[in-house]
Length: 333
Image 1 (tube, rainbow, N blue to C red):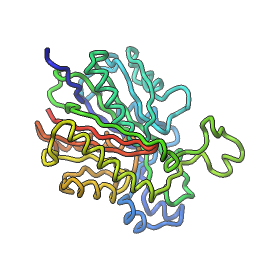
Image 2 (image 1 turned 135 degrees about the vertical axis):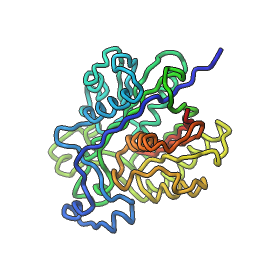
Image 3 (image 1 turned 180 degrees about the vertical axis):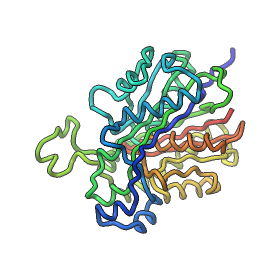
Image 4 (image 1 turned 90 degrees about the horizontal axis):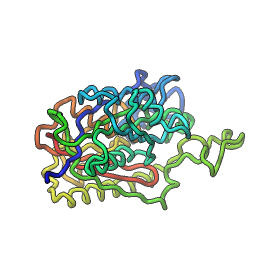
């Protein structure tokens, strides 16, 4: 009996219209274009409009993925939404997206693995498809980081932007002329380091109070120097585990799509695996860190550029708060 293989058959992304440049940030906080570029590689980032939300951006990205695959929303079985910036704590952003797409057959739920969320979502979709439980799954990563960024904190506000990416996952041979088989997914978590990236308030440990608002506890906090060290080590480990599991040599990787958090982290990963810099997909300069949506946005851009040829492999890798990390090996069909 032929094995069912989970395949990405459609990709889409959405970026808000407004660009927040380094020059704009120089007027808002004590920083400079040179300081930002040297430390992160970011020149500008997109900022959602007042009435744009995680749900609305996710809907737009999903529509493009469905159109790319030639599939109707009514035929989708499941919607998995990765977000750390949901519209509400309850209901789920996935439920709002399901309604917005009119995907009435689909059950929908959120996952929260911070910047690694899209790869976590691919893992779930792969399991659902290959078990035969479901046949058509939308994996959406969508983030309105600007709603949780403290624009008085120069160490974090320069890094983050807003955006969404989506992938439709089906079994191979679902009528798709091209796509990407999801060959393997490797995931990891280290909760002992959870304080390194967090939003202290808004959960049940610290509900909203006058004091929590006054002390800006509802904004993202990050220990940047420690995060850098963990990010490089954990992403390197995830890539090695993924390649070893599939018995694929490093030389077989045509493209690397890393989480777009920091250009120096991306450079370090590229060097550790001898992947040419020109074969590393880079969107950080124009979009900044859009959390879990960086990887699908970058994959969509690579796909649109026809950068990956048939039978070539690309490797997705991400790291985020939790701490969480993950890698996935894809093959172009």
